[in-house]
Image 1 (cartoon, rainbow, N blue to C red):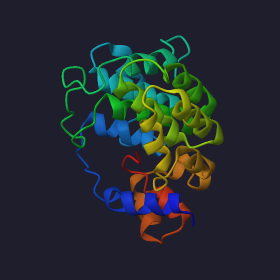
Image 2 (cartoon, helix red, strand yellow):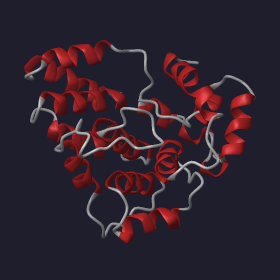
Image 3 (spheres, rainbow, N blue to C red):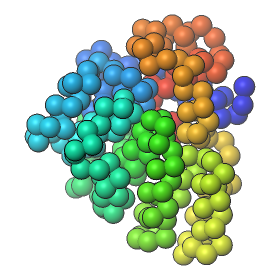
Image 4 (cartoon, one colour):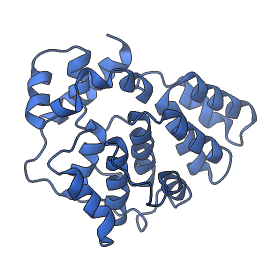
Length: 232
């Protein structure tokens, strides 16, 4: 079992068993994105969140991300590419733009939302689309924005994204960001997880079944079943 999958197990295993039965909307949407299957919410309910116009901004972005990964996004809505770009261009660490969600871990802000949206694209088979959007934003904006883009590219973890980071390291304004990101080899990357994504089919990703799989051993399938908590 490679190091990336071992990291997933160590980070996520305990969190899977601690899902709350009465959790609020935001963590249910986030878990739906992370696991790739509706978690205590239906696709129809997620669609309604986008359509009703009254949900919080974060919940709408997570709902759109969930529908992307469920292959249920509506092509007549605002393009997901534009939504990701708008988040990248926002004040990523602003508590006013991204107030701390009550039931999510401390520090879930614009940066974490970017990583979640990129993850949704990769896990829905749209890896190159995600890379293309990030490439457009790689060398513009604040230092924080560029750091987030570099990390998002590293999270995808393909030869193309590593090449983009290396190019930035040579020519970018904050080359040390790229250097530090490339030095981090310990975390799993989205492309590796996507390659094993269907070892646990979507219809098998219920809370009860995932817990049974996790408790059954420590292989790749068990690691994938532990995706009940963010991996970035």
